[in-house]
Image (cartoon, rainbow, N blue to C red; front, side, top):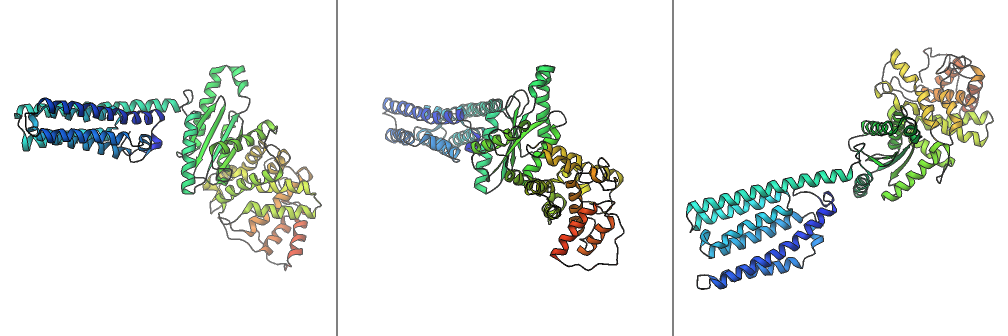
Length: 540
């Protein structure tokens, strides 16, 4: 540990040791000062006895003063190393004054120079030990140069002894620091997976939350359980289960940022701490983790963000656990799965996706408004309209796995890029299928890019075989795509968008949905019909 370490870097045992060091140092001061006064009394016939006795008395009084100071407060302070260095420096000055008054380096009092160096080695960090040792050797050599009554041979030998004691003390401090660091890492690390254990994760999370509160930053905590993990152990043995747990940690660590933290809370339960992240991005990150883990093991997840869900780890973990239980295997337990909560979750995730595509336009919210307007014209009821709003906001969620180079490309997509883009409906449906209460909208999202004539994707459905909600979403998505800016073109006028919807009605779009949207637009505004046509195919 360096001299500049913060209190948070010391473990409780280290703090207790530093507190005990003050008590030991005080009693050592009393003992040395008592021995010094005895030495003065036995050699009273020599010179400067009164002054030397006064020096030892000052040392004893200093010990009394330090004994009355609040030890724990000192040790917990960021200035603790300055305190210990100041204490050692004052002791060295008193030893030097007494040695000088007793005849210089020939005085037996000079032997006390070794004590501060050895004492520093007990609990001082390496930097402080080196400082104390260097100051001690420097002070002794100064005495030897200006008032050295002992021979140069004796003085050099004693200086060498001090240097050796300082070197050994520094090595001991370094060795102790390594041992404490190793023990601290072991006490905070899960031995099977190598990630943080519960204690380590909680300590890291508490420190991050406190820092976030001080600096007005956001963050999030994600908890996750592996579904059917017991079946892996029962069917394939515990070795296979252990290997799966290690793979989960490797996957989580690979996808999360270096500033995030992964912890194993116990058994098949894990947690991820997202530092300095807004709620929408946290939801997006959770979706990425879910998608990656689904390669080998599905999992249930619960996310809580701070400061929105709370400012204490216990509160955040409780919120996250409730949300995890609410989604586990589709069985609500303790948490709320009300439409308002699902809508809030959908809005956060949709916002994160929208930011990747166009930070200046809330595409998902706009598609949602247009889709609701169409569905209302088609006579949908309130319950179905609520589901459609969520589906509209999540229709592009599968683009979480589409690279930014494709989403933000200004030119036409290459064949391979277009094929990668087409996968987003399948990915989005898989992600939404993992959220309890949203089963009904999964096929709506999967088929949201099916064309009315069967030329769409992913399954090439045709006409009435396509869910009506998916046909509504396609029209709403196309309308918003045309009337908003895209990386490859500026926004088209609404008049052109109307003409394009009419041109592709019956082929790409459901004519009934197109008619419903046009009636809505006519009710809101009156648009002149244009003779000009936009002949290029629509890119959504």
